Length: 237
Ligand code: TMP
Ligand code: MG
Image (cartoon, rainbow, N blue to C red; front, side, top):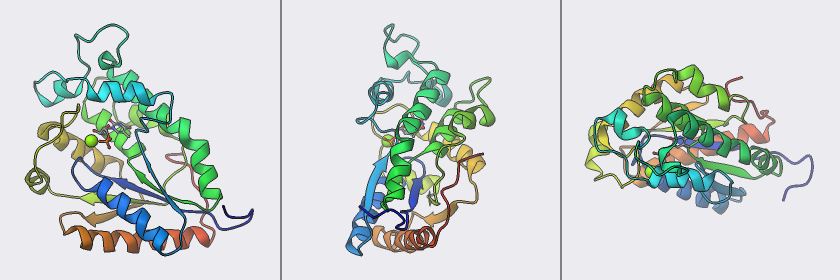
């Protein structure tokens, strides 16, 4: 661990639709940073294991979604057993995803201050994009963003830009809720509404090595800015 007064680590975030290569690139980036002597850790949200909320979120995501139109497929299963996370309302699951980030926020800032660079796979932008894409009455973008306002903000958000056709060509989705093409396109549109000054577009349709090189350039730049004293900002404040 770095000594007090040592430069802080960078908060490097990956966002993108499913199958855009976030997890692959995040893992590679951590290894590349470590190889050049930058302490780095891989984090992901939802954090399904190290949190109070993680188990409920995992249960919700792995519950079979009703096969129907995109919106319905994304929303809560009406026939879920009472007390099961599978039947949580859109509002309740949204707040759990947010709470899952708040559970980790103090540890996140602590790691950055110890000089550890955090490579994070999804964060509050996913939260706002996925819930607002459901088009649930009363759950517009402002409602979706509110519970995450004040979280530590990323120093750079790497948007893994991948056209729908390219995403489709990457093969089938898994079995989790939200993993269907129609809903993913609604999510893509919603992401466009939440982008901010921290975002940098990465052409995720290129080969894995080419993408990794571009990602590393952006990450090294963020690490340098943080070393030079760029403050940790609050998200959406
Ligand atoms: P994962 O596939 O990256 O593990 O994420 C699981 C799903 O959860 C993915 O479809 C995106 C969704 N999600 C939300 O709906 N809200 C959130 O806040 C986050 C972080 C993810
Ligand atoms: Mg997934």
